Image (tube, rainbow, N blue to C red):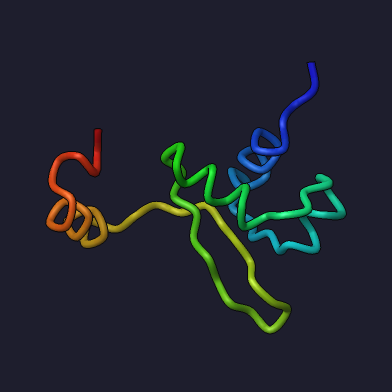
Length: 81
C-alpha cells in the first residue's frame, strides 16, 4: 500500500523540520501544500505557518496553554470535540 500525500506530510512534519511549497512539490509531488495543510489542521494537527525569506514554510507544533484557552473562550468545549 502506498502512503497518501497527507500521510507523507505528517511523517515529514513529525521530524520537526519546516516545509516549503517548493520542497513539498519536489519531495512528495504535492502541488497545493496550503490545501493539504488545511486538511491536516481539520484532522487536529497543529501546523504553524511561518513567513521566511524563501517564502512560506509550514511546521508541526504544539499549541501553548494561551492558545488552547483562547480557543476555549471563543468556541467553548466544541473546539475540542
